[in-house]
Amino acid sequence: MTTAAISAFSAAPQTAGAKPLISSDFDTFLKMLTAQMQNQDPLNPIDSTDYATQLATFSGVEQQARTNELLTNLSSQMSVLSMSQLASWVGQEARADAPVWMEGDPVTMQLSPAIGADRAMLVVYDAWGAVVSREEVAAEAGLYDWHGSDAAGDPLPEGAYMLSLESYSGETLLGETAVESYARIIEARSGPAGAILVLDGGIEVPASRISALRAPSTAI
Image 1: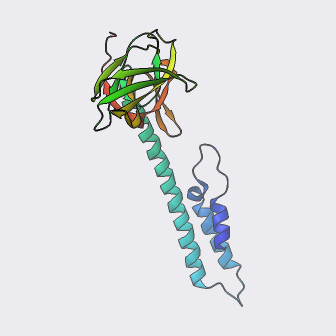
Image 2: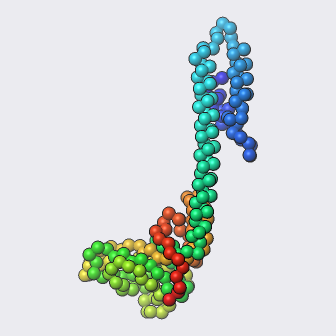
Image 3: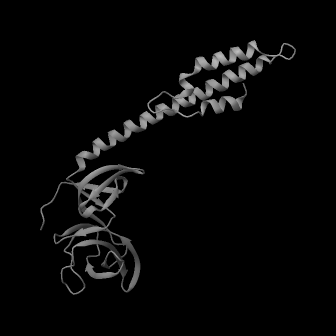
């Protein structure tokens, strides 16, 4: 039996719920190896080194299959553990760099102007990327409640908005950075890239992007 044959044998399709074929058919392999020894050409016997190589190859593939199975089980266990931990987050308020959902209540955000800034501007974009408001804010780090007004001071329609912070030194723009805001977590679920948190308005954020949690606050 060649190394290629062993590899093909180990890669054969599996049935649902069955053990990996490479793990369940070791006896079959030994029977095949015995038959190979019994039916070899007496005038050109197979070198004993070839038998040792075949056994070593099969053993290595079997070990890899078992290792993969253990890693899969461990991954599943870690996923369940992660979801069980995230379940306690539901109902809390998470802070993340994500769109905000405005429906009339103030949205609390963390402002972090650039070092050296003496003036800061909160810029609000709608779902299509158009600027709908520019609001002067304090040029110092801290929490800020945005009440959802447009450039004329009128309430913005209900919906999702993106916010950024422009930092100035005099009239010189030092930079524009994303703004982290708080929103209530309404659901936690798993996804291909890991745990996903669903915030108010159906906004989805990877759990890895949550920078802070707090108890639900009362609307101002």
